[in-house]
Length: 284
Image (cartoon, rainbow, N blue to C red; front, side, top):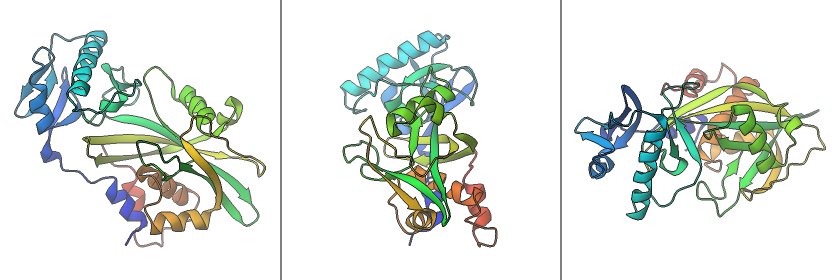
Protein backbone atom coordinates (compact mmCIF):
# COMPACT_ATOMS: atom_id res chain seq x y z
CA UNK A 1 0.00 0.00 0.00
CA UNK A 2 1.59 3.27 -1.08
CA UNK A 3 0.96 6.68 0.46
CA UNK A 4 2.49 10.13 0.51
CA UNK A 5 4.45 9.22 3.64
CA UNK A 6 5.67 6.01 2.00
CA UNK A 7 7.73 8.05 -0.47
CA UNK A 8 9.39 10.08 2.27
CA UNK A 9 10.28 6.89 4.12
CA UNK A 10 11.66 5.31 0.94
CA UNK A 11 13.95 8.28 0.33
CA UNK A 12 15.24 8.21 3.91
CA UNK A 13 15.99 4.50 4.32
CA UNK A 14 19.63 3.93 5.30
CA UNK A 15 21.87 2.18 7.81
CA UNK A 16 24.97 4.16 8.70
CA UNK A 17 26.52 1.19 10.51
CA UNK A 18 27.47 -0.07 7.06
CA UNK A 19 29.58 3.01 6.37
CA UNK A 20 32.65 4.87 7.59
CA UNK A 21 32.91 8.67 7.60
CA UNK A 22 34.88 10.13 4.71
CA UNK A 23 36.94 13.14 5.75
CA UNK A 24 38.89 15.87 4.02
CA UNK A 25 41.18 17.74 6.41
CA UNK A 26 39.07 18.17 9.58
CA UNK A 27 35.70 17.93 7.85
CA UNK A 28 33.42 14.96 7.29
CA UNK A 29 32.24 15.32 3.71
CA UNK A 30 30.75 11.89 3.04
CA UNK A 31 30.32 8.21 3.88
CA UNK A 32 32.04 5.15 2.40
CA UNK A 33 30.85 1.55 2.62
CA UNK A 34 33.23 -0.70 4.56
CA UNK A 35 33.95 -2.87 1.52
CA UNK A 36 34.87 0.15 -0.60
CA UNK A 37 36.96 1.56 2.23
CA UNK A 38 39.02 -1.64 2.34
CA UNK A 39 39.38 -1.46 -1.44
CA UNK A 40 40.65 2.13 -1.20
CA UNK A 41 43.48 1.07 1.11
CA UNK A 42 45.51 0.12 -1.96
CA UNK A 43 45.70 3.81 -2.85
CA UNK A 44 47.96 4.56 0.09
CA UNK A 45 49.27 7.82 -1.36
CA UNK A 46 45.72 9.19 -1.55
CA UNK A 47 43.77 7.74 1.40
CA UNK A 48 44.38 7.08 5.06
CA UNK A 49 42.07 4.10 5.68
CA UNK A 50 41.29 3.23 9.31
CA UNK A 51 38.65 0.99 10.90
CA UNK A 52 36.55 4.01 11.88
CA UNK A 53 37.07 6.39 8.94
CA UNK A 54 38.59 7.13 5.55
CA UNK A 55 40.35 10.42 4.92
CA UNK A 56 42.39 12.05 2.19
CA UNK A 57 46.08 12.28 3.00
CA UNK A 58 47.12 15.54 4.66
CA UNK A 59 49.71 16.02 1.93
CA UNK A 60 46.78 16.62 -0.44
CA UNK A 61 46.11 20.11 0.88
CA UNK A 62 44.83 22.04 -2.13
CA UNK A 63 41.72 21.89 -4.30
CA UNK A 64 43.84 20.99 -7.31
CA UNK A 65 45.89 18.23 -5.68
CA UNK A 66 42.82 16.61 -4.11
CA UNK A 67 40.82 16.76 -7.34
CA UNK A 68 43.68 15.32 -9.39
CA UNK A 69 44.28 12.49 -6.89
CA UNK A 70 40.57 11.62 -6.79
CA UNK A 71 40.41 11.60 -10.59
CA UNK A 72 43.28 9.07 -10.71
CA UNK A 73 41.52 6.85 -8.18
CA UNK A 74 38.24 6.97 -10.10
CA UNK A 75 39.98 5.98 -13.34
CA UNK A 76 41.37 2.94 -11.51
CA UNK A 77 37.96 2.09 -10.00
CA UNK A 78 36.38 2.19 -13.44
CA UNK A 79 39.18 0.00 -14.82
CA UNK A 80 38.63 -2.67 -12.13
CA UNK A 81 34.84 -2.55 -12.46
CA UNK A 82 34.04 -1.00 -9.07
CA UNK A 83 32.42 1.96 -10.84
CA UNK A 84 30.70 1.28 -14.16
CA UNK A 85 31.66 4.46 -15.96
CA UNK A 86 32.42 8.14 -15.46
CA UNK A 87 29.88 10.81 -16.34
CA UNK A 88 32.50 13.47 -17.17
CA UNK A 89 30.55 16.02 -15.15
CA UNK A 90 32.15 17.33 -11.97
CA UNK A 91 30.35 17.96 -8.68
CA UNK A 92 31.79 20.08 -5.87
CA UNK A 93 32.67 18.51 -2.53
CA UNK A 94 31.58 20.96 0.17
CA UNK A 95 30.81 20.96 3.87
CA UNK A 96 27.66 23.06 3.33
CA UNK A 97 25.81 24.89 0.58
CA UNK A 98 27.78 27.99 -0.40
CA UNK A 99 31.02 26.82 1.22
CA UNK A 100 34.27 26.82 -0.72
CA UNK A 101 34.71 23.46 -2.51
CA UNK A 102 37.42 21.26 -1.04
CA UNK A 103 37.75 19.32 -4.31
CA UNK A 104 35.65 18.21 -7.25
CA UNK A 105 34.56 14.66 -8.06
CA UNK A 106 32.96 13.00 -11.06
CA UNK A 107 29.19 12.77 -10.74
CA UNK A 108 29.25 9.00 -11.12
CA UNK A 109 31.21 8.60 -7.86
CA UNK A 110 29.20 10.93 -5.63
CA UNK A 111 27.06 8.19 -4.06
CA UNK A 112 30.02 5.82 -3.70
CA UNK A 113 31.66 8.38 -1.43
CA UNK A 114 28.40 9.56 0.15
CA UNK A 115 29.07 13.14 -0.93
CA UNK A 116 26.38 15.71 -0.25
CA UNK A 117 24.97 16.86 -3.57
CA UNK A 118 22.52 19.48 -4.71
CA UNK A 119 20.05 19.84 -7.53
CA UNK A 120 17.05 21.83 -8.72
CA UNK A 121 13.49 20.87 -9.68
CA UNK A 122 10.91 23.07 -11.36
CA UNK A 123 7.16 22.57 -10.98
CA UNK A 124 5.65 23.90 -14.19
CA UNK A 125 1.96 24.65 -13.63
CA UNK A 126 -1.02 26.17 -15.39
CA UNK A 127 -3.83 27.93 -13.56
CA UNK A 128 -7.21 27.04 -15.10
CA UNK A 129 -10.81 27.76 -14.04
CA UNK A 130 -11.10 24.15 -12.82
CA UNK A 131 -7.90 24.38 -10.75
CA UNK A 132 -4.14 23.90 -11.05
CA UNK A 133 -2.59 21.61 -13.67
CA UNK A 134 1.02 20.35 -13.57
CA UNK A 135 3.29 19.60 -16.49
CA UNK A 136 4.64 16.06 -16.08
CA UNK A 137 7.49 14.56 -18.08
CA UNK A 138 7.97 10.88 -18.85
CA UNK A 139 11.63 9.93 -18.77
CA UNK A 140 13.07 8.13 -21.77
CA UNK A 141 13.39 4.38 -21.40
CA UNK A 142 17.14 4.49 -22.14
CA UNK A 143 17.94 6.58 -19.04
CA UNK A 144 20.39 5.00 -16.59
CA UNK A 145 18.40 6.35 -13.62
CA UNK A 146 14.63 5.79 -13.36
CA UNK A 147 13.96 4.90 -17.02
CA UNK A 148 10.35 5.43 -18.03
CA UNK A 149 9.44 7.06 -14.71
CA UNK A 150 7.46 10.29 -14.42
CA UNK A 151 9.32 13.52 -13.69
CA UNK A 152 9.00 17.25 -13.10
CA UNK A 153 9.00 19.76 -15.96
CA UNK A 154 12.69 20.48 -15.31
CA UNK A 155 15.16 18.75 -12.98
CA UNK A 156 18.92 18.41 -12.79
CA UNK A 157 21.95 18.09 -10.56
CA UNK A 158 24.07 21.07 -9.58
CA UNK A 159 27.53 20.72 -11.17
CA UNK A 160 30.81 22.36 -10.24
CA UNK A 161 31.46 25.70 -11.91
CA UNK A 162 27.87 26.87 -12.48
CA UNK A 163 25.74 29.13 -10.32
CA UNK A 164 22.26 27.91 -9.45
CA UNK A 165 20.78 30.52 -11.81
CA UNK A 166 23.06 29.43 -14.67
CA UNK A 167 22.17 25.81 -14.08
CA UNK A 168 18.45 26.62 -14.00
CA UNK A 169 18.70 28.27 -17.42
CA UNK A 170 20.78 25.40 -18.83
CA UNK A 171 18.53 22.61 -17.55
CA UNK A 172 15.34 24.44 -18.53
CA UNK A 173 16.54 24.85 -22.11
CA UNK A 174 17.81 21.26 -22.42
CA UNK A 175 14.89 19.50 -20.78
CA UNK A 176 11.89 21.60 -21.75
CA UNK A 177 13.01 24.07 -24.44
CA UNK A 178 12.48 27.11 -22.19
CA UNK A 179 14.06 30.44 -23.06
CA UNK A 180 16.37 32.02 -20.51
CA UNK A 181 13.79 34.73 -19.86
CA UNK A 182 11.03 32.24 -19.13
CA UNK A 183 13.30 30.06 -16.99
CA UNK A 184 14.22 33.04 -14.82
CA UNK A 185 10.54 33.62 -14.08
CA UNK A 186 10.64 30.46 -11.98
CA UNK A 187 10.17 31.40 -8.32
CA UNK A 188 12.45 29.75 -5.73
CA UNK A 189 10.12 28.38 -3.04
CA UNK A 190 12.40 26.38 -0.77
CA UNK A 191 14.16 23.02 -0.72
CA UNK A 192 13.63 19.37 0.16
CA UNK A 193 16.32 17.03 1.47
CA UNK A 194 16.70 13.32 2.02
CA UNK A 195 19.30 10.70 2.99
CA UNK A 196 18.91 7.55 0.92
CA UNK A 197 20.98 4.37 0.73
CA UNK A 198 21.32 3.00 -2.79
CA UNK A 199 23.17 0.16 -4.47
CA UNK A 200 26.09 2.52 -5.12
CA UNK A 201 26.26 4.00 -1.63
CA UNK A 202 24.66 6.92 0.18
CA UNK A 203 22.78 9.92 -1.24
CA UNK A 204 22.57 12.93 1.09
CA UNK A 205 20.76 15.19 -1.38
CA UNK A 206 19.22 18.65 -1.29
CA UNK A 207 16.88 19.79 -4.06
CA UNK A 208 16.16 23.48 -4.56
CA UNK A 209 12.51 23.78 -5.60
CA UNK A 210 11.01 26.31 -8.02
CA UNK A 211 7.46 27.03 -9.14
CA UNK A 212 6.93 28.32 -12.67
CA UNK A 213 3.47 29.40 -13.77
CA UNK A 214 3.12 29.15 -17.54
CA UNK A 215 0.41 30.15 -20.01
CA UNK A 216 -2.22 27.72 -21.25
CA UNK A 217 -0.68 27.69 -24.72
CA UNK A 218 2.80 26.80 -23.41
CA UNK A 219 4.19 23.54 -24.81
CA UNK A 220 7.44 22.11 -23.42
CA UNK A 221 9.91 20.57 -25.85
CA UNK A 222 12.74 18.28 -24.76
CA UNK A 223 16.09 18.82 -26.52
CA UNK A 224 18.53 16.43 -24.79
CA UNK A 225 16.75 13.08 -25.14
CA UNK A 226 16.02 12.72 -21.44
CA UNK A 227 12.23 13.11 -21.70
CA UNK A 228 10.06 10.98 -23.96
CA UNK A 229 6.89 13.09 -23.69
CA UNK A 230 5.20 15.79 -21.63
CA UNK A 231 1.65 15.67 -20.26
CA UNK A 232 -0.46 18.34 -18.58
CA UNK A 233 -2.41 16.78 -15.70
CA UNK A 234 -4.95 18.24 -13.24
CA UNK A 235 -3.58 18.37 -9.71
CA UNK A 236 -6.05 15.71 -8.53
CA UNK A 237 -4.60 13.26 -11.04
CA UNK A 238 -1.01 14.06 -10.08
CA UNK A 239 -1.79 13.71 -6.37
CA UNK A 240 -3.54 10.37 -6.85
CA UNK A 241 -0.65 9.01 -8.93
CA UNK A 242 1.85 9.98 -6.22
CA UNK A 243 -0.32 8.63 -3.41
CA UNK A 244 -1.21 5.33 -5.08
CA UNK A 245 1.87 4.33 -7.07
CA UNK A 246 5.64 4.43 -7.50
CA UNK A 247 5.33 5.76 -11.05
CA UNK A 248 7.30 8.95 -10.37
CA UNK A 249 11.09 9.05 -10.02
CA UNK A 250 11.81 8.56 -6.32
CA UNK A 251 12.77 12.14 -5.39
CA UNK A 252 10.16 13.76 -7.65
CA UNK A 253 7.52 12.41 -5.27
CA UNK A 254 8.97 14.63 -2.53
CA UNK A 255 8.95 17.72 -4.75
CA UNK A 256 5.30 17.14 -5.68
CA UNK A 257 4.27 16.48 -2.06
CA UNK A 258 5.92 19.80 -1.18
CA UNK A 259 3.90 21.48 -3.97
CA UNK A 260 0.67 19.91 -2.65
CA UNK A 261 1.41 21.23 0.85
CA UNK A 262 2.36 24.74 -0.24
CA UNK A 263 -0.66 25.15 -2.51
CA UNK A 264 -3.10 23.94 0.14
CA UNK A 265 -4.06 20.66 -1.51
CA UNK A 266 -2.84 18.78 1.57
CA UNK A 267 -4.26 20.35 4.71
CA UNK A 268 -3.32 20.20 8.44
CA UNK A 269 -6.44 18.12 9.13
CA UNK A 270 -4.79 15.17 7.37
CA UNK A 271 -3.49 12.83 10.13
CA UNK A 272 0.08 12.54 8.77
CA UNK A 273 0.35 16.22 7.73
CA UNK A 274 3.10 17.14 10.22
CA UNK A 275 5.04 13.97 9.42
CA UNK A 276 4.93 14.95 5.76
CA UNK A 277 5.98 18.55 6.33
CA UNK A 278 8.87 17.68 8.64
CA UNK A 279 9.89 14.63 6.62
CA UNK A 280 10.53 16.70 3.51
CA UNK A 281 13.50 18.39 5.14
CA UNK A 282 15.73 15.88 6.88
CA UNK A 283 19.02 17.00 8.45
CA UNK A 284 22.00 15.67 6.53
